[in-house]
Amino acid sequence: MSFYALAVYFATVFVLVAAQDVELPVQTCKRDASDYTSCLRLAIQEAWPNFIAGIPKLEVPPLDPYFLEYQHTVYETGDLRADVTVKNVNIYGLAKSNFLAVRPHHAADSFKLEVDLELPKMLIEGNFKANGAYGALQIGGEGFFNISLEDIKDTWSIEGPLANDKWTLEHFRLNPEIGKMQIWFSDMFNGNEQLNKVALNFVNEYWPSLYREMLPFLSNKLDEYLTEIGNRVFSKVSFSKTFP
Ligand SMILES: *[C@@H]1O[C@H](CO)[C@@H](O)[C@H](O)[C@H]1NC(C)=O
Image 1 (tube, rainbow, N blue to C red):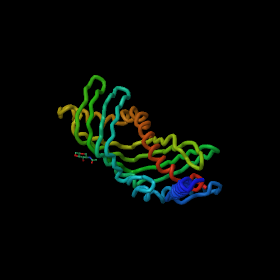
Image 2: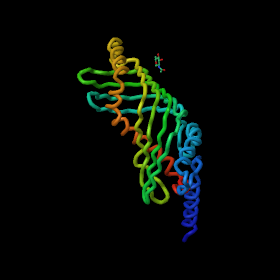
Image 3: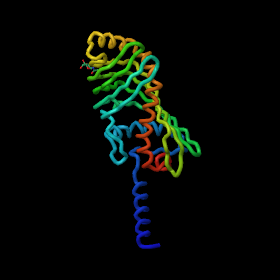
C-alpha cells in the first residue's frame, strides 16, 4: 500500500468515524424494557424543544416558526386545478405539540414509528401567486394569504428499511384532523374584490369538504418533503444507538 493510499484510507476512516459521531439529542429507551413505548413518548416530548430550536449538525432548521422560502405546486384534485407558488411562508405553532402516544414496530430489516400528537393552534402566512380554475370558474392572482388552524390532531407514520445500522425513511405520512380553519387571501380573482369576498366566504364555510378533497394530494406532497428532511437526520445517526 503506497503512502498516498494509506493517507486516503486513514482520512476515509476518520471521516466515517466523525460521521458516526452525531447523536440525536433524545433520551434513548431500551427496546426490551416494559415501559418502552411510554419512555419513547416522554423522550420525544422532552427532546422536542431542541428540534424546535433547530439542530444545525443534523440539518434540522428551526421549526417554530418554520420558514419556507419557496414552493411551487400544481394541484389537481376534484374540481380544482391550480398552479400555486408560495413565497416567504412562516408556519407558527409546532412548539406547542403535545405528544400523546408512540407506537414502535421493530422488524428484522425495517422499522416503523407511529406518533400521535395534538396541537392547539397553527398559523401559516406568506405570499402566494396562483392561477387555474375551480370547475368553470377561472382563478388567478397574487398577494398575501394566511390560514389559522385550531385543535389539530395528527398521527405521524414514519417507516422504511434498515441496513448497515441506518434507517432509511421511505414514508413520513401525516394525517391531520383539524377542528377549525380560517382562511384569508388578498386576491384570487385578478383584482375582482367582490368575487374574492364570495370565494373567502365559500372556503371558510366549506373548508371541511375542501380539505378532505385536498388531503390525499397534500399528504403525498408532505410525505415527499418530510421524508427528505427525516433522511437528513437518520442518515447521520446510528439506528442501534438511537433505538437500543
Ligand atoms: C389574516 O390577514 C388579514 C389581513 O391582513 C387579517 O385581517 C387577519 O387577522 C389575519 N388572520 C390571522 C389569523 O392572522
